[in-house]
Length: 107
Image (cartoon, rainbow, N blue to C red; front, side, top):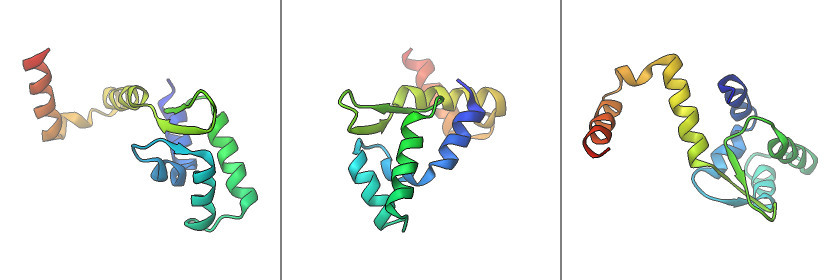
């Protein structure tokens, strides 16, 4: 996993990620969102979706029929912990300390 590439990818397709949230969305709905809410022409919306679908380092999971997409929780967690290894932001976050205590208590 290339953290740098994934973060660039998320930044490039931020509008799509923002719309996805924690839900599975159909690509047709994503296109409509980009056109209506983000004021993108149809050709730009299609190009964004095409690039989004074909990027190498991603944290998405495309359905077997290829019609919908969601954020893959396991890939997201891998990204988070890989970033933390490099940046060490959990050292300064009380929520991370509480989470570690829970993990230590139950694992």
